[in-house]
Image (cartoon, rainbow, N blue to C red; front, side, top):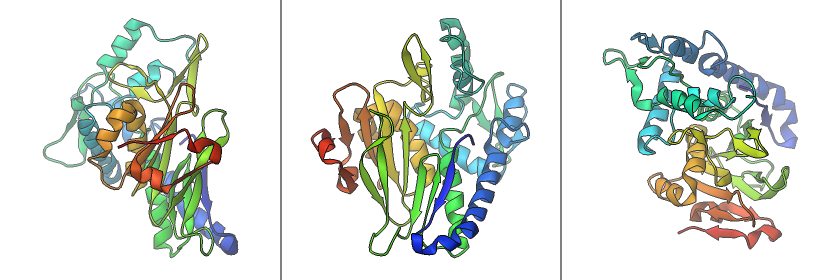
Length: 318
């Protein structure tokens, strides 16, 4: 899936790590085989090849489940999250190598015409069959599949009887138990995009909770000295701007991953309204222009411990 994966255990149980690694690695490999747009026989690749052919394609139950979750997020966000974003990602060079230049207006218009979640049609006679109505459409679940993979890895460890662990797939985390006796969970850092590499503070994850971050510093292209993040706003056909990073706390990796991209695009004002309909989900926005400004939902602020020099820059949204 193009990123780094890790499993952590308490130091006192380090001998269990090989037995923990293997089921998680197998779970991630299984998800990649079905969801990758780079593997020709994955469910998504088969659906993309059939785009515009009036042909339904069978999906595995897992892919169908995640795709239905993605489409609910599309509906609720009025298209801010769109699993058919593939043509725009390619136009900006995020799926087929670095482009030499910014896409032209004509190229963006062509890509935008091939994007639209409402043009994904389910077979009324079979719950796991879909077709892409327009030629050139491309499913791309990169904004949600890693969170699902974390859930699958997490569940594999629970089934194997492990009780204290942290699963990490490219910054999508889900925790169980505690990192050491008396810790009451697993503490993780919230990354500071200015400068890259530091942290703004820490967040404690308790049983089953997940955290995910979307940032403009992770994957980007640069034209004329301007950095464009890989998080695409399908409403305008361009990378979203105004936010440097969003960190989301939610009950599952699937929810967390999809929400982090959506809230990055929506920004804090619209994002706060969106989260009001999702109990148990909290977020922190880092704006992309100086001075450093952090905007947090009340629930996130209660769980977040900022560094002393950051605390004065934190605003709790109401």
